[in-house]
Length: 212
Image (cartoon, rainbow, N blue to C red; front, top):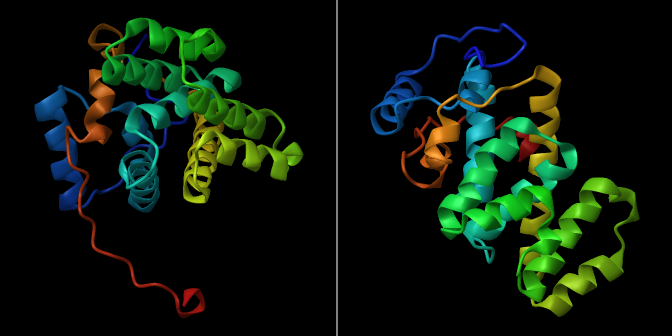
């Protein structure tokens, strides 16, 4: 690979000091800034929205473990054949689980993995939401409840699957490429969003009155 970020040459905006410090911390700890962040850096508001949403879904309080959320990311990305997300999140599954085979099975066929019935139900729901969202019915939600998930957990499963469907489509549309370093590092670089590097604390934006 040539080291390109995407097919769109949008450049990088004038970034705030908080974001510059964040990128510098990535370079210090990881030796790189992940291309997904650089792809959004043409508009700091979009970068902020992406990073805050990602961190809330993948790091925020949830009944789902970090590994389970990464498993959803990989299974959704596998259906969508997203090169960027499969490279990054497949590696993250291997890293968090300590099981290289699990990461490969999530990419190829999660049903081949030795998962709990609860995890299998979670991933089957994510698959249906990805492939046939209009066919999600109460029976699908009830299957998750019967597997042991709360209503809040169902929200988190759906939100995580939906986020990666969006991200997969953006990555495909702009031909986003993973950093060359992902391969030999086997995913360590992506773990910056799993606590290795703290995201910047941007000043909060005042909400429009119509939001209140």
